[in-house]
Length: 168
Image (cartoon, rainbow, N blue to C red):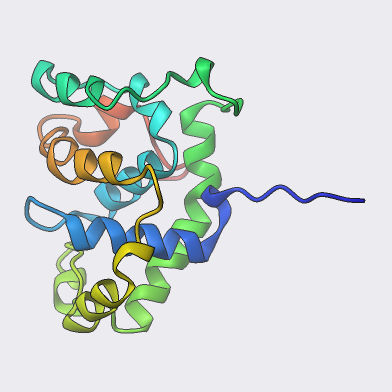
């Protein structure tokens, strides 16, 4: 018998689900494309948040989640930058699907901000509890509330996470 491993990081449909979850719960303004991609990366790989720089207040909130460190997880993670680059095409494809289906506010997307359109809010509401998987809710809350406040200064998200896309 053959088994096939499934990685949520490399699944377009799961990425769409995570985007809908993030955008339906976003607390502070509208995320940029980079912030949405980075937040999605950490939603699907929460253990890797241990390797980011955070203010003391945000770190306290994160530590309260009691997320295991990468070395204490069942999975063996590659470097965050490598995995982030591996996810690039999937994240872009998922974002284009949301835009193409009219689930994002197009005038805001043109301005570099990402928020759900009225149709996107309806879909998120209809999916309700199916949108957020068991165990994701605390991480989702952290990413859309506390994590969303950091990385706006000099260097931005790249300086606190070390994540960069090859060629950008």
